[in-house]
Length: 303
Image (cartoon, rainbow, N blue to C red; front, top):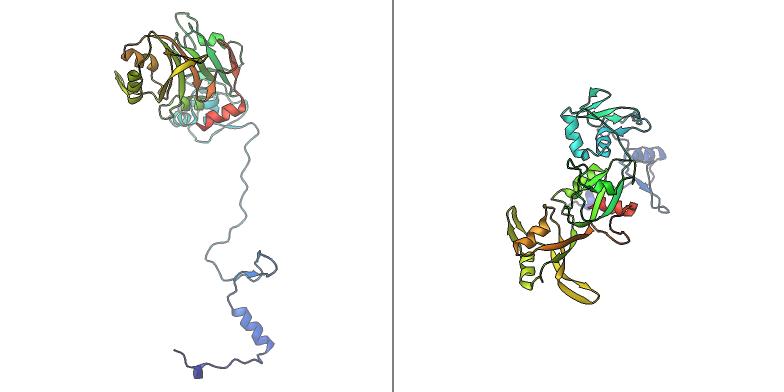
């Protein structure tokens, strides 16, 4: 405890010069004007901070007009996703103007020739189309047996090379997405994405409540257990036909809907995909296609 006797009295008649010296040796911080909420740096301490002063930085050189990252160029060409393109580049599988390029972030300039596997690539405008597939067409870009393919239905829709995302078997009708966006196609078909789909299924006999419960709980198939997310009887004009059900699921396994019902002793007469990743058949007649809106494309890229 400090005794009052030991406290030296302050000299109220301190000289102006001393006062100025004292104020200069204080450790001022930011000063604040009572009329303003902002801080002023005029009285900031000049004590060294220990950090080296930052000199003027050299501005980054802008990329030439029309330049595009090599992995993006490959993805736009419909080969694969950007991540997979990085792997191709790192493996030395991509050439630009005849020379192997392994540099990540390499910029492709207008007029450059990019090739992969001996084939020249062409970066194209990304396009997205939705087809209401009819029965009797196979989902492939080319068929050695010269059967009818879904690409025949898309003939003339655009100048870019597009391809189907996923597949519907020959007898299945409904929604099928087409694009040249390799990155989006990869995401929508990857099992981890679990894009939801809704099918309308017409069977050879009424579906029992017991079998609907089995489908919800899961059925053991040759490639592992599988269950549906929802199943309901379809209503037509206020009446319910128990031979027709709506099925929602996320799996992309081959012929999964048909195999599920076949495992329970049913025969599928008609199978129609009515919803794919939130896209519907509204105002899209069978055998016709339409281009997706920007809003629909944005939604798909958020999945």
